Image 1 (cartoon, rainbow, N blue to C red):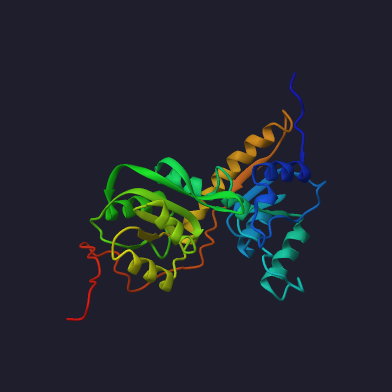
Image 2: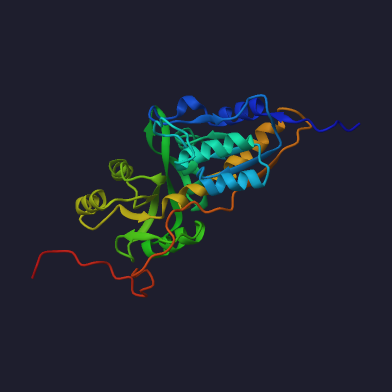
Length: 296
């Protein structure tokens, strides 16, 4: 006999999310977990997005979502007002007025297994994966092997194909013809892990938000050799996690009740802030590495 569908409560969904991405594994500075919502409210529709922007919240409201799950926090730094005169105030007000709960999984999703970097490593086809480093006693980042090895230029093309397109494209530092086989990855900002990358023996490091001075120093230390660097963009390197999080949550909720009713969707809104670039030389066919050495 068929059982009638049963609504999940926000309490049920939060418990499932936090079994997958425990709040205690987040960094001390982070702000994760439930931001808005009544734990007793029913949840029939869940929207996943990287950032809780006003447009994403608008999508959640238009779709009649009961819960928005994002990777990046809305209230990472303290605020003293949620008046609608500020973007954050308008976001909180819109969520509360519409009855849309917000739950955030940030650094607790980074260190999960599978987590943000695991999904990125899988997308690049890396075998024999292992942690790159640790954060608060939890493994973070991934190192894996390409089979077979390829040139840096060919690997950069693979990265561009595996990840969503971005306005800025893929930035690469290194000899285009250099062979690469061992790859380190860190979804999102990763130039604070360059020492770990060197220690890992990686030929190339894929991450995002690489700043001028750390990169220049790392390339000087490498004397033009390994590890080479690829900046693939923050949004692109992390957005792949959303589908994984959705699938894992659906599986976890199936164990709550045999006849639950919940719809899920990954937002189609691109929250990458960049819209276009000018003057880039990525289309150059020769991909000539920049000259190094003294002044002649």
